[in-house]
Image (cartoon, rainbow, N blue to C red; front, side, top):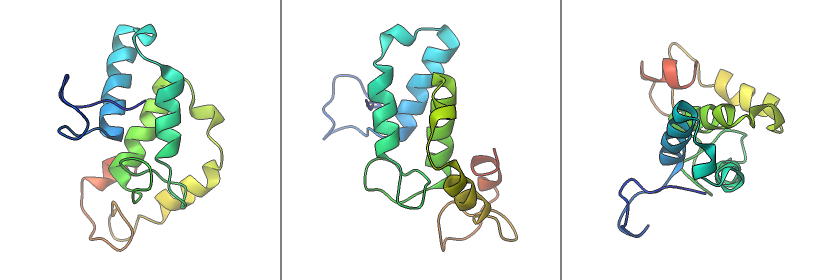
Length: 121
């Protein structure tokens, strides 16, 4: 359900996380090529990256992050699976709590202008 950034290299030698699932979803969406991937496994990987607080991390058992949450939600939306996402109110609460004087990407981290997109989108 996940994808590596370099084809032909093992997952030990190449990153494989929610960012690359998002990239694969973008390609499939733009080219209307959903039969090239296992959408159910992609969805399972995304849902497995969900943290206890309702947001998403890089992968299973990872800390929630604004950029990863964007990648997860955007991929689910392109896949047509966003409406069935459970506990949406918990996710919305997490996103709202990232706004202070600006937006932060993770709990207790400094605010950064880029998160106004990643969290606000």
